[in-house]
Image (spheres, rainbow, N blue to C red):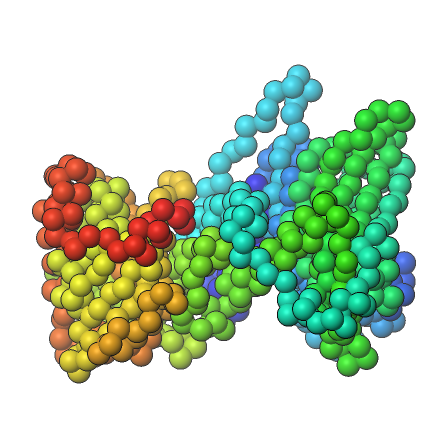
Length: 582
């Protein structure tokens, strides 16, 4: 069961418009921050917070599974704010439906703020006879829950390729140290990494165990945070603040009576942050050590005004230390990509984001999830309709989006295959003059109503359904590529969020919806239709329907032959991008 944070759902005003269905797996926990929960700065200890988060998530997982569950992993955690205890007025609220959100309430001022959010994955314990427990499938009951379900599959994809991205970054030679490393004064002031090493042994006692007599996952995470904080303190000689945790992954259990050996070391230090690697091993008396958990934590040191301080640099140990040093740089780049692409709301980032092989997974995640979130909004308004082709509009925070929808007599999987080939789009969409083939980064040109040609660099992300009721998705958004500057004589257009969802309906038909979050470059094409002065959307969709009907009976080989004859051949760029897995 993969957890899903509430904060990524619709905005509060939209939630008020829609009557919420109570999710049977939702668990809420409230805790008062007591003196025993606080650190030296009278702030809530991160270790204590992780214990509460793990408990809440486990209760929700077991409510769905109907059997004991254990934590398999917790995805990246970003701590947005600290929780300062003043008297006894700080109350922590945990809410989890398929995800965890932590918020804080000041009981004296009635102020509320979000502290952090996380996604957790749990697995069920085998039965006493060793049999695996079969989980009942999650059945989404609303469109919003359907989106949560399918976006969880995107997060799983990101988790599975994380290690491969690290290896690709290191093997490609694209990792470079910061400019500070070339500064001779900085080099002379470097701190040897071995000086930050920390080892700590903990004996697992009954109070540290969960209801299954295994060591409580939240307790292990708390011990790991403790040794990581000590390692970070040895570098900065100050009190560090934990900002992010890279994916706790539980590799195996430990039980009461085990000794847990925690090792921590600063892998690398950057200008204002440092990465600490933590490894947890379990052993029993004279038995061998078992690797049970690993994590990477990012710390900062704040001055009196809450601004990050400059940190001393690290001199890595030979061999293994050098490897950790380089991998820390790769993880920093990945963290920045994730924070820039995934963690920010769609309206807070530029329309066009730089594309490169190191951020392709996160761009694709954002691309697909943004389209699914757009389609799930509940306040679409029917603007016009002609022969069962409907045009809907949505106004939200000064952003206008539109949806064109109609049912076609073509199976959903076939429609997905045909519409995925963007090189065929000019044959049915007169707005497009030409489109060079390629999986992503496709240079596209279109005629504007004013007669000025525009070109686009589009990232195309394609997804098959995650389960029953989930649509096929073809998501599009603009990216920038240094190898493709604006074409001479063209204006470079931008696409924020666009694409198709294709849902299988009865009698082997499919409901096709085209979405576009209208940027200034796109708005002129649809403004007259929205105003009711024309119906070009209808003619374009009819042309698309005819194209699908005409091609539905052709074999895949015939379609490929036709496409090869109609195109000028792939460019070297599109060949390179076509081989990437998005």
